[in-house]
Figure 1 (cartoon, rainbow, N blue to C red):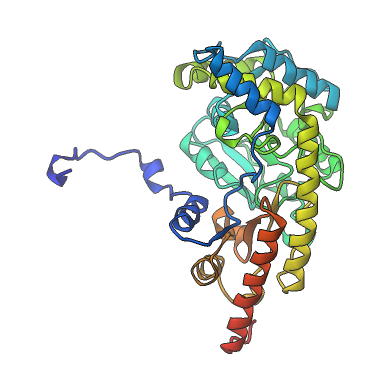
Figure 2 (tube, rainbow, N blue to C red):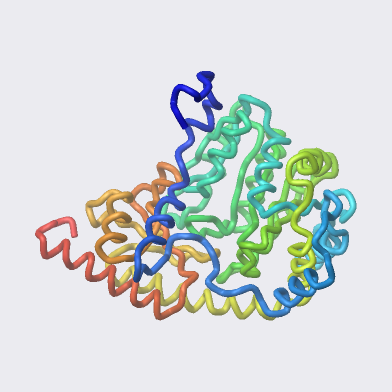
Length: 399
């Protein structure tokens, strides 16, 4: 387009100031290269379980290709609420307290739009998923990060959270298990955070998309904790646990008045999640547990191989409790996170994500997804070893 024909009035300054996703940048580069071992994008390498795919195919064959209700299929909402009660003892009404969304990303956006007024502060433990801070800013909120450290396994410190609370604080945004660190917060820490929310009258947004991918301890639904039920929005879905990233179906559960307003925005923007995806998700919820357990078992084995290998190479990394990410320190390399990731990609064709894209606390780390075959993970470790040895041979004393 000729620049003289572009209207001169400014576009949205918040969006213009937001950088593109650091994850997608490396993914796009790697996609143009041959022979790359991709440990960057957080996506299962499994296909969706057979029983779920068959249900999706049947939905198409049966002509289930139109709109559903804005809230989503009642049978899916019922299955979700039954699961949460069965697994965690927390009760939500399928009719009024559950909304089916186009992935968890839409659920996060809806929750922020409903809870946040311009100038409200949202406290977010960092490092954190790349969408959290921009999502808060897009709705006029102010993200306030509370740093966590590798030395403590990226545990959230409730005292540090309380120090960050001001009269403008509106909510806490928590993820456990977390992306990018894989950290699982102990139940007593989450209860302390709920207690802070009660004490200071705050809302909680709990991103539980990795809830099923927990390896060393039992997971929980934050809404089940004492004091949390009436001030918490639960975000979850099927992308990670059921290998359904492309189906784009998630869900939100929370107090009726909050879900009602989230549904109001949803009906004007997305209308509903894809019909056939909701049919498939219903089957995933009701019939695919054995497939999920097999995937979890495989991830656990991969985690052991890869994280042990990273430590053997001198890239310190605590064993993550959940999700499918390792977040090793690369400070011993003397390189920044960006330089390390770029050099590793172009020199050894291993794609990882620089830690600084997850917030300032991520500098000095890289995120590696171990949602890849054991053979690929071992090859990636061999390439990492060659990468580090080459720098040592070049006389970089920090290596």
